[in-house]
Image (cartoon, rainbow, N blue to C red; front, side, top):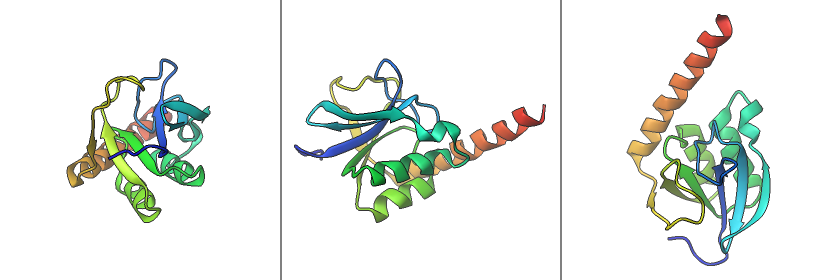
Length: 130
């Protein structure tokens, strides 16, 4: 459960709606409901999109990650787990500050996210070859 004073890391778009690590416009840190840090999502210019976000959350001192559904491929999950970060899954499209509705990460989420990451990588390769 998210506690008071937790530093929460997540990815959002301009309207503060959660979006997948690999596509969101911003990476933000939130403490006690207030955004304390915002930067352009480093995954947007990285080959390893999801793990880049996970590493950056750890670098910034996050204690909790709200990962939009589809964000937690296996490498990202390992990076966060090894750093002792709590991980919860949220629905993409929901806005930061809406009634919190999140679930503890599951093996199914990691598997689904890993498959999605592979699919995205394949589509990138195909689109670059055309």
